[in-house]
Length: 111
Image 1 (cartoon, rainbow, N blue to C red):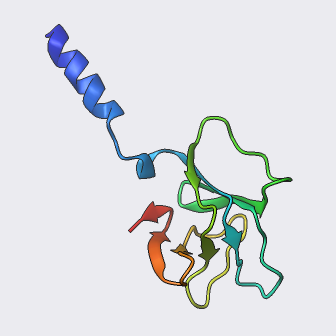
Image 2 (image 1 turned 45 degrees about the horizontal axis):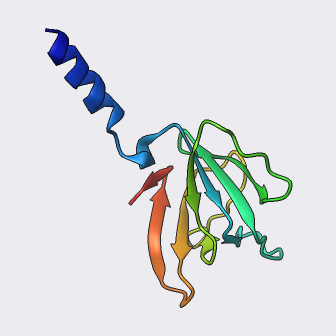
């Protein structure tokens, strides 16, 4: 019985990083979709499928209990017709240096 409890606890701890409560994308160039100048380096904080905070790395506090994703050298942008702003649905695309989409997030989940 004790072994079973230990195994269950270990399995619960082995979830994918994308399923943790708070994700922080750090260092990328952010194009928020509102028409302003890109923010670089940026911080984008995602929690419960929403953007919790978005801004410059120098002025956006990073929660200590979060999964940190290094996006330096990449560009973060919203899908067509959307914007990236605090309180909005966490939908975004991550582009590499060639402009190719390498990852997509929808409602805070990586696709």
